[in-house]
Length: 73
Image (cartoon, rainbow, N blue to C red; front, side, top):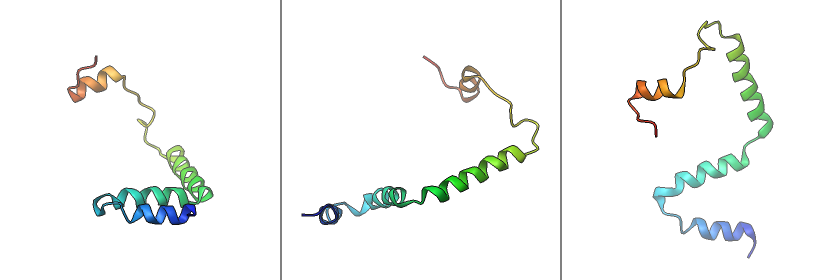
């Protein structure tokens, strides 16, 4: 049995409620990495060109946890 045949046989056994996970995974496997790199580069340029003066502000983990009401170990 070829890999493709085995994958098809397994797909027949996947419950309908989990097909979304399979589709998302397959889309990731078949994605065009060059297109993805171009998209990410565009996002980076958008960030660099953003005039928001607070884009470099930081917050400590402790402050974030306090703001969210989360107890750190």
